[in-house]
Length: 420
Image (tube, rainbow, N blue to C red):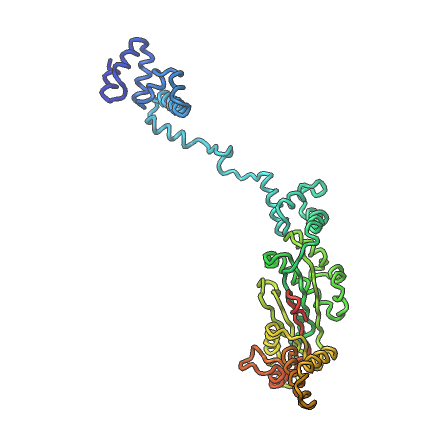
Protein backbone atom coordinates (compact mmCIF):
# COMPACT_ATOMS: atom_id res chain seq x y z
CA UNK A 1 0.00 0.00 0.00
CA UNK A 2 2.96 2.31 0.55
CA UNK A 3 4.01 1.71 -3.08
CA UNK A 4 0.48 2.55 -4.29
CA UNK A 5 0.37 5.77 -2.28
CA UNK A 6 3.90 6.79 -3.37
CA UNK A 7 3.27 6.12 -7.09
CA UNK A 8 -0.08 7.87 -7.12
CA UNK A 9 1.20 10.93 -5.23
CA UNK A 10 4.09 11.35 -7.68
CA UNK A 11 1.84 10.77 -10.72
CA UNK A 12 3.94 7.81 -11.77
CA UNK A 13 0.99 5.58 -12.61
CA UNK A 14 -2.66 5.15 -11.64
CA UNK A 15 -3.34 3.74 -8.21
CA UNK A 16 -6.17 1.37 -9.36
CA UNK A 17 -3.84 -0.38 -11.76
CA UNK A 18 -1.25 -1.01 -9.08
CA UNK A 19 -3.95 -2.14 -6.64
CA UNK A 20 -5.20 -4.72 -9.15
CA UNK A 21 -1.68 -5.94 -9.80
CA UNK A 22 -1.00 -6.19 -6.06
CA UNK A 23 -4.02 -8.42 -5.61
CA UNK A 24 -3.14 -10.61 -8.60
CA UNK A 25 0.59 -10.97 -8.08
CA UNK A 26 2.63 -9.05 -5.49
CA UNK A 27 5.96 -9.61 -7.31
CA UNK A 28 4.66 -8.16 -10.58
CA UNK A 29 3.28 -5.14 -8.75
CA UNK A 30 6.62 -4.58 -7.00
CA UNK A 31 8.65 -4.67 -10.23
CA UNK A 32 6.12 -2.49 -12.06
CA UNK A 33 6.18 0.11 -9.31
CA UNK A 34 9.98 0.31 -9.40
CA UNK A 35 9.94 0.61 -13.23
CA UNK A 36 7.29 3.28 -13.05
CA UNK A 37 9.35 5.19 -10.50
CA UNK A 38 12.21 5.30 -13.04
CA UNK A 39 10.17 5.79 -16.22
CA UNK A 40 6.42 5.95 -15.70
CA UNK A 41 5.29 5.15 -19.20
CA UNK A 42 7.02 1.77 -19.18
CA UNK A 43 4.45 0.11 -16.95
CA UNK A 44 2.10 -0.22 -19.89
CA UNK A 45 4.74 -1.92 -22.09
CA UNK A 46 6.12 -4.27 -19.40
CA UNK A 47 3.04 -5.55 -17.59
CA UNK A 48 -0.34 -4.39 -18.88
CA UNK A 49 -0.39 -4.43 -22.71
CA UNK A 50 -0.10 -7.90 -24.26
CA UNK A 51 2.00 -8.41 -27.43
CA UNK A 52 -1.16 -8.63 -29.53
CA UNK A 53 -2.11 -5.15 -28.45
CA UNK A 54 1.41 -3.86 -29.16
CA UNK A 55 1.23 -5.22 -32.69
CA UNK A 56 -1.86 -3.11 -33.31
CA UNK A 57 0.09 0.03 -32.43
CA UNK A 58 2.33 -0.45 -35.45
CA UNK A 59 5.93 -1.66 -35.83
CA UNK A 60 7.52 1.69 -34.94
CA UNK A 61 5.55 2.14 -31.69
CA UNK A 62 6.11 -1.52 -30.79
CA UNK A 63 9.86 -1.28 -31.20
CA UNK A 64 9.92 1.98 -29.24
CA UNK A 65 7.95 0.57 -26.33
CA UNK A 66 9.86 -2.72 -26.32
CA UNK A 67 13.26 -1.02 -26.37
CA UNK A 68 12.15 1.38 -23.65
CA UNK A 69 10.97 -1.56 -21.56
CA UNK A 70 14.35 -3.20 -21.94
CA UNK A 71 16.07 -0.02 -20.85
CA UNK A 72 13.79 0.19 -17.80
CA UNK A 73 14.53 -3.38 -16.82
CA UNK A 74 18.26 -2.78 -17.11
CA UNK A 75 17.91 0.30 -14.95
CA UNK A 76 15.96 -1.66 -12.36
CA UNK A 77 18.66 -4.34 -12.19
CA UNK A 78 21.29 -1.69 -11.54
CA UNK A 79 19.25 0.31 -9.01
CA UNK A 80 21.26 -1.20 -6.13
CA UNK A 81 24.44 0.58 -7.29
CA UNK A 82 25.64 3.79 -5.66
CA UNK A 83 25.26 5.97 -8.81
CA UNK A 84 21.86 7.04 -10.18
CA UNK A 85 20.38 4.71 -12.82
CA UNK A 86 20.08 7.28 -15.62
CA UNK A 87 23.65 8.49 -15.16
CA UNK A 88 24.88 4.92 -15.20
CA UNK A 89 22.98 4.19 -18.38
CA UNK A 90 24.55 7.16 -20.16
CA UNK A 91 28.01 6.18 -18.93
CA UNK A 92 27.63 2.65 -20.26
CA UNK A 93 26.26 3.96 -23.52
CA UNK A 94 29.25 6.33 -23.96
CA UNK A 95 31.70 3.48 -23.35
CA UNK A 96 30.24 1.36 -26.11
CA UNK A 97 32.43 1.23 -29.24
CA UNK A 98 31.37 3.00 -32.37
CA UNK A 99 29.82 0.21 -34.42
CA UNK A 100 28.66 2.39 -37.30
CA UNK A 101 29.49 0.75 -40.61
CA UNK A 102 30.93 -2.21 -38.75
CA UNK A 103 34.28 -0.56 -37.90
CA UNK A 104 35.87 0.42 -34.65
CA UNK A 105 37.05 4.00 -34.15
CA UNK A 106 40.69 4.90 -34.75
CA UNK A 107 41.14 2.05 -37.19
CA UNK A 108 44.28 2.50 -39.28
CA UNK A 109 44.00 -0.63 -41.39
CA UNK A 110 44.10 -0.14 -45.18
CA UNK A 111 41.55 -2.08 -47.15
CA UNK A 112 42.51 -3.74 -50.45
CA UNK A 113 40.07 -1.50 -52.33
CA UNK A 114 41.92 1.61 -51.13
CA UNK A 115 45.20 0.35 -52.56
CA UNK A 116 43.51 -0.44 -55.87
CA UNK A 117 42.06 3.07 -55.96
CA UNK A 118 45.52 4.51 -55.40
CA UNK A 119 46.93 2.44 -58.27
CA UNK A 120 44.11 3.56 -60.57
CA UNK A 121 44.74 7.21 -59.62
CA UNK A 122 48.48 6.83 -60.25
CA UNK A 123 47.88 5.20 -63.64
CA UNK A 124 45.36 7.88 -64.66
CA UNK A 125 47.73 10.71 -63.73
CA UNK A 126 50.62 9.19 -65.71
CA UNK A 127 48.67 8.15 -68.83
CA UNK A 128 45.49 10.25 -68.84
CA UNK A 129 43.44 7.14 -69.68
CA UNK A 130 39.82 6.85 -68.48
CA UNK A 131 39.20 5.28 -65.09
CA UNK A 132 37.53 2.12 -66.43
CA UNK A 133 40.41 1.53 -68.85
CA UNK A 134 42.87 1.85 -65.96
CA UNK A 135 40.87 -0.63 -63.86
CA UNK A 136 40.71 -3.05 -66.77
CA UNK A 137 44.45 -2.78 -67.29
CA UNK A 138 45.33 -3.32 -63.62
CA UNK A 139 42.98 -6.30 -63.30
CA UNK A 140 44.45 -8.04 -66.34
CA UNK A 141 46.20 -11.34 -65.47
CA UNK A 142 49.35 -10.36 -67.33
CA UNK A 143 49.56 -7.06 -65.43
CA UNK A 144 48.84 -8.31 -61.89
CA UNK A 145 48.56 -4.81 -60.39
CA UNK A 146 51.89 -3.53 -61.72
CA UNK A 147 51.67 0.08 -62.94
CA UNK A 148 54.52 -0.25 -65.46
CA UNK A 149 52.91 -3.31 -67.03
CA UNK A 150 49.55 -1.55 -66.99
CA UNK A 151 51.03 1.26 -69.09
CA UNK A 152 52.24 -1.27 -71.66
CA UNK A 153 48.83 -2.95 -71.61
CA UNK A 154 47.11 0.37 -72.30
CA UNK A 155 49.45 1.07 -75.23
CA UNK A 156 48.75 -2.35 -76.74
CA UNK A 157 45.02 -2.59 -76.12
CA UNK A 158 43.62 0.78 -75.04
CA UNK A 159 45.40 2.94 -77.63
CA UNK A 160 44.70 0.59 -80.51
CA UNK A 161 41.04 0.36 -79.52
CA UNK A 162 40.66 4.11 -79.15
CA UNK A 163 42.49 4.78 -82.43
CA UNK A 164 40.25 2.38 -84.32
CA UNK A 165 37.13 4.05 -82.93
CA UNK A 166 38.13 7.62 -83.78
CA UNK A 167 39.87 6.93 -87.09
CA UNK A 168 38.24 8.69 -90.02
CA UNK A 169 36.54 11.38 -88.01
CA UNK A 170 36.87 14.94 -89.26
CA UNK A 171 39.46 16.97 -87.35
CA UNK A 172 39.16 20.70 -88.04
CA UNK A 173 40.16 22.19 -84.68
CA UNK A 174 43.56 22.13 -83.07
CA UNK A 175 46.63 24.16 -82.14
CA UNK A 176 49.91 25.37 -83.61
CA UNK A 177 53.08 24.91 -81.58
CA UNK A 178 56.28 26.97 -81.83
CA UNK A 179 59.86 26.43 -80.75
CA UNK A 180 62.88 28.75 -81.15
CA UNK A 181 66.39 27.47 -80.42
CA UNK A 182 68.99 30.14 -79.62
CA UNK A 183 72.72 30.07 -79.05
CA UNK A 184 74.46 31.29 -75.92
CA UNK A 185 74.84 34.83 -77.31
CA UNK A 186 71.11 35.11 -78.07
CA UNK A 187 71.43 34.58 -81.81
CA UNK A 188 68.90 32.37 -83.50
CA UNK A 189 69.93 28.90 -84.54
CA UNK A 190 66.71 27.16 -85.53
CA UNK A 191 62.93 27.47 -85.23
CA UNK A 192 59.93 25.31 -85.96
CA UNK A 193 56.14 25.37 -86.25
CA UNK A 194 53.88 22.35 -85.91
CA UNK A 195 50.15 22.09 -86.50
CA UNK A 196 48.15 19.32 -84.81
CA UNK A 197 44.44 18.88 -85.51
CA UNK A 198 41.68 17.64 -83.20
CA UNK A 199 37.94 17.12 -83.54
CA UNK A 200 36.73 19.71 -81.04
CA UNK A 201 37.98 22.96 -79.59
CA UNK A 202 37.38 21.57 -76.09
CA UNK A 203 39.93 18.80 -76.65
CA UNK A 204 42.46 21.19 -78.16
CA UNK A 205 42.42 23.26 -74.96
CA UNK A 206 43.33 20.32 -72.72
CA UNK A 207 46.75 20.05 -71.10
CA UNK A 208 47.37 16.65 -72.68
CA UNK A 209 46.85 18.02 -76.18
CA UNK A 210 48.92 21.18 -75.57
CA UNK A 211 51.76 19.09 -74.21
CA UNK A 212 51.76 16.84 -77.29
CA UNK A 213 51.73 19.82 -79.67
CA UNK A 214 54.75 21.25 -77.88
CA UNK A 215 56.54 17.89 -78.12
CA UNK A 216 56.04 17.87 -81.90
CA UNK A 217 57.39 21.42 -82.25
CA UNK A 218 60.41 20.62 -80.06
CA UNK A 219 61.19 17.47 -82.04
CA UNK A 220 60.95 19.41 -85.31
CA UNK A 221 63.38 22.08 -84.10
CA UNK A 222 65.85 19.35 -83.16
CA UNK A 223 66.04 18.17 -86.80
CA UNK A 224 66.03 21.64 -88.36
CA UNK A 225 69.42 20.94 -89.95
CA UNK A 226 67.68 18.48 -92.27
CA UNK A 227 64.57 20.22 -93.57
CA UNK A 228 63.67 17.20 -95.69
CA UNK A 229 63.07 15.21 -92.49
CA UNK A 230 59.79 17.04 -91.87
CA UNK A 231 58.50 17.01 -95.44
CA UNK A 232 57.05 13.54 -94.89
CA UNK A 233 54.91 14.23 -91.83
CA UNK A 234 53.84 10.60 -91.11
CA UNK A 235 57.44 9.46 -91.45
CA UNK A 236 58.60 12.26 -89.17
CA UNK A 237 56.05 11.30 -86.48
CA UNK A 238 57.07 7.65 -86.58
CA UNK A 239 60.82 8.33 -86.45
CA UNK A 240 61.18 11.46 -84.29
CA UNK A 241 61.47 11.41 -80.51
CA UNK A 242 60.75 13.93 -77.80
CA UNK A 243 63.20 15.29 -75.24
CA UNK A 244 62.68 12.22 -73.01
CA UNK A 245 63.54 9.82 -75.83
CA UNK A 246 59.96 8.68 -76.31
CA UNK A 247 58.73 8.21 -79.88
CA UNK A 248 56.20 10.77 -81.08
CA UNK A 249 54.00 7.96 -82.35
CA UNK A 250 53.70 6.63 -78.80
CA UNK A 251 52.93 10.10 -77.48
CA UNK A 252 50.24 10.45 -80.14
CA UNK A 253 48.68 7.12 -79.10
CA UNK A 254 48.71 8.18 -75.46
CA UNK A 255 47.04 11.49 -76.32
CA UNK A 256 44.32 9.71 -78.34
CA UNK A 257 43.74 7.30 -75.44
CA UNK A 258 43.38 10.18 -72.97
CA UNK A 259 41.30 12.55 -75.13
CA UNK A 260 39.27 9.97 -77.09
CA UNK A 261 39.31 12.00 -80.28
CA UNK A 262 40.93 11.73 -83.68
CA UNK A 263 44.26 13.60 -83.47
CA UNK A 264 46.48 14.22 -86.47
CA UNK A 265 49.77 16.01 -87.11
CA UNK A 266 48.86 18.10 -90.15
CA UNK A 267 52.02 19.98 -91.03
CA UNK A 268 55.50 20.79 -89.73
CA UNK A 269 57.79 23.63 -90.82
CA UNK A 270 61.39 24.35 -89.79
CA UNK A 271 63.75 27.31 -90.25
CA UNK A 272 67.52 27.41 -90.01
CA UNK A 273 69.46 30.63 -89.44
CA UNK A 274 70.80 31.92 -92.74
CA UNK A 275 73.47 34.11 -91.11
CA UNK A 276 75.48 34.15 -87.87
CA UNK A 277 73.93 37.57 -87.18
CA UNK A 278 70.36 36.33 -87.52
CA UNK A 279 67.81 36.71 -84.75
CA UNK A 280 64.49 34.85 -84.54
CA UNK A 281 61.30 36.36 -83.20
CA UNK A 282 58.06 34.53 -82.67
CA UNK A 283 54.48 35.22 -81.68
CA UNK A 284 51.63 32.86 -80.71
CA UNK A 285 48.06 34.11 -81.00
CA UNK A 286 45.34 32.67 -78.76
CA UNK A 287 47.71 30.86 -76.45
CA UNK A 288 46.06 27.77 -74.99
CA UNK A 289 48.29 26.93 -72.04
CA UNK A 290 50.91 28.82 -70.04
CA UNK A 291 53.04 25.67 -69.94
CA UNK A 292 53.23 25.31 -73.74
CA UNK A 293 53.99 27.74 -76.57
CA UNK A 294 51.01 26.92 -78.74
CA UNK A 295 47.83 28.63 -79.88
CA UNK A 296 45.40 29.03 -82.74
CA UNK A 297 48.07 30.59 -84.99
CA UNK A 298 51.77 31.37 -84.77
CA UNK A 299 54.52 33.03 -86.79
CA UNK A 300 58.31 33.16 -86.81
CA UNK A 301 60.40 35.92 -88.37
CA UNK A 302 64.15 35.91 -89.05
CA UNK A 303 65.88 39.28 -89.15
CA UNK A 304 69.55 39.92 -89.78
CA UNK A 305 71.55 42.61 -88.00
CA UNK A 306 73.17 44.78 -90.69
CA UNK A 307 74.68 47.47 -88.45
CA UNK A 308 75.89 47.89 -84.90
CA UNK A 309 72.80 49.77 -83.78
CA UNK A 310 70.56 46.89 -84.78
CA UNK A 311 71.97 44.43 -82.23
CA UNK A 312 70.00 45.64 -79.20
CA UNK A 313 66.69 46.21 -80.98
CA UNK A 314 66.77 43.06 -83.12
CA UNK A 315 64.88 40.78 -80.73
CA UNK A 316 62.08 43.25 -79.99
CA UNK A 317 61.76 44.25 -83.66
CA UNK A 318 61.54 40.60 -84.71
CA UNK A 319 58.79 39.94 -82.17
CA UNK A 320 56.75 42.95 -83.32
CA UNK A 321 57.16 41.88 -86.92
CA UNK A 322 55.95 38.38 -86.02
CA UNK A 323 52.83 39.94 -84.48
CA UNK A 324 52.31 41.90 -87.69
CA UNK A 325 52.61 38.72 -89.75
CA UNK A 326 49.83 37.04 -87.76
CA UNK A 327 47.57 40.06 -88.23
CA UNK A 328 48.34 40.96 -91.88
CA UNK A 329 48.97 37.41 -93.20
CA UNK A 330 51.44 38.23 -96.00
CA UNK A 331 51.99 35.63 -98.69
CA UNK A 332 55.49 36.57 -99.85
CA UNK A 333 58.59 38.14 -98.35
CA UNK A 334 59.18 40.89 -100.99
CA UNK A 335 58.20 41.61 -104.62
CA UNK A 336 61.21 39.68 -105.88
CA UNK A 337 59.94 36.49 -104.23
CA UNK A 338 56.55 36.57 -105.98
CA UNK A 339 56.44 33.81 -108.65
CA UNK A 340 56.56 35.01 -112.26
CA UNK A 341 53.33 33.31 -113.26
CA UNK A 342 51.49 35.12 -110.46
CA UNK A 343 52.88 38.48 -111.63
CA UNK A 344 51.90 37.82 -115.26
CA UNK A 345 48.42 36.77 -114.30
CA UNK A 346 47.86 39.91 -112.26
CA UNK A 347 49.12 42.13 -115.09
CA UNK A 348 46.80 40.43 -117.54
CA UNK A 349 43.85 41.02 -115.24
CA UNK A 350 44.68 44.72 -114.88
CA UNK A 351 45.25 45.14 -118.63
CA UNK A 352 41.91 43.50 -119.35
CA UNK A 353 40.21 46.02 -117.09
CA UNK A 354 41.79 48.91 -119.00
CA UNK A 355 40.62 47.78 -122.44
CA UNK A 356 38.26 50.07 -124.28
CA UNK A 357 39.51 53.17 -122.52
CA UNK A 358 41.25 54.61 -125.62
CA UNK A 359 44.34 55.45 -123.54
CA UNK A 360 47.89 55.47 -124.92
CA UNK A 361 50.01 52.36 -124.17
CA UNK A 362 52.47 54.29 -122.01
CA UNK A 363 49.60 55.51 -119.82
CA UNK A 364 48.21 52.01 -119.57
CA UNK A 365 51.63 50.75 -118.49
CA UNK A 366 51.82 53.33 -115.71
CA UNK A 367 48.32 52.39 -114.55
CA UNK A 368 49.24 48.70 -114.50
CA UNK A 369 52.45 49.48 -112.56
CA UNK A 370 50.42 51.41 -110.00
CA UNK A 371 47.99 48.51 -109.66
CA UNK A 372 50.88 46.07 -109.20
CA UNK A 373 52.35 48.27 -106.50
CA UNK A 374 49.10 48.05 -104.59
CA UNK A 375 49.12 44.31 -105.16
CA UNK A 376 52.60 44.01 -103.62
CA UNK A 377 51.54 46.08 -100.64
CA UNK A 378 48.83 43.56 -99.93
CA UNK A 379 50.80 40.31 -100.27
CA UNK A 380 54.49 41.18 -99.63
CA UNK A 381 55.77 41.60 -96.08
CA UNK A 382 58.35 44.27 -96.82
CA UNK A 383 55.80 46.44 -98.67
CA UNK A 384 53.02 46.24 -96.08
CA UNK A 385 52.21 48.95 -93.56
CA UNK A 386 53.49 47.87 -90.16
CA UNK A 387 50.38 47.24 -88.06
CA UNK A 388 52.19 47.24 -84.72
CA UNK A 389 54.31 50.38 -85.08
CA UNK A 390 52.75 53.78 -84.42
CA UNK A 391 51.68 55.54 -87.60
CA UNK A 392 51.83 52.29 -89.62
CA UNK A 393 54.99 53.00 -91.61
CA UNK A 394 56.19 50.57 -94.26
CA UNK A 395 57.90 47.47 -92.86
CA UNK A 396 61.03 47.90 -94.97
CA UNK A 397 61.38 51.49 -93.77
CA UNK A 398 61.08 50.51 -90.10
CA UNK A 399 63.70 47.77 -90.38
CA UNK A 400 66.16 49.88 -92.35
CA UNK A 401 65.93 52.58 -89.70
CA UNK A 402 66.85 50.02 -87.03
CA UNK A 403 69.74 48.54 -89.01
CA UNK A 404 67.88 45.27 -89.67
CA UNK A 405 66.79 43.25 -92.67
CA UNK A 406 64.08 40.62 -92.75
CA UNK A 407 65.33 37.36 -94.23
CA UNK A 408 62.41 34.94 -93.90
CA UNK A 409 59.16 34.29 -92.11
CA UNK A 410 56.74 31.45 -91.46
CA UNK A 411 53.03 31.67 -90.68
CA UNK A 412 50.86 28.76 -89.63
CA UNK A 413 47.28 28.66 -88.38
CA UNK A 414 44.36 26.30 -88.20
CA UNK A 415 42.89 28.15 -91.18
CA UNK A 416 44.42 26.68 -94.32
CA UNK A 417 44.75 30.12 -95.87
CA UNK A 418 47.09 31.22 -93.08
CA UNK A 419 49.77 28.58 -93.66
CA UNK A 420 52.76 30.12 -95.44
